[in-house]
Image (cartoon, rainbow, N blue to C red; front, side):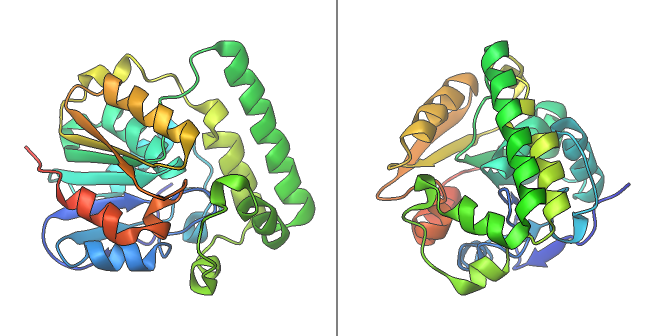
Length: 249
């Protein structure tokens, strides 16, 4: 089993960007085009999405699949939401591969076992919902959540979303927040420069960003003004500028 379709844009230091749930390697075109002005930007469809919709993999398995697909020389790894959680697992398991780490709207996981089990049950129920109503109707419901209230209405971004209901359902079951191991202790071994970001209006993930900042020994936390959960889609220039400030070792 291997991941397909590694996409390259721009030239310069390598920056790998991992998309969020329901997105694909083609999402965030404005954001990626800004980054490609100073970096070689690599994107790839994560398991359950796009070209890799038929692949099912846990967070750890996804990290290992990425390790096989990505360059051997150290690179900057960034990710948003689900992609940010994958990036954290990659950093824990393959930290020698990284020159720096960037996460947007990500979490350390849920420490309490009962709370984590309850979240996993909600993720599984949501997976059943995707399969029941189909990907297009599910995307309407997903994007109608308050966390996306300030997301621009962009038909091209909507067209870049993943469209395979079974793949999305498997993603929820395999890498949903309820499956994520608590990484509070594990990430203490990650010493590369790290940038932790959240939209300033995304109250929950501002708190998560602060917890991640505390867990990562060489990190800075930044909050994107007047932005929600998908800050890189709402404020691409500001998020790209923050990323440009990260200096690898």
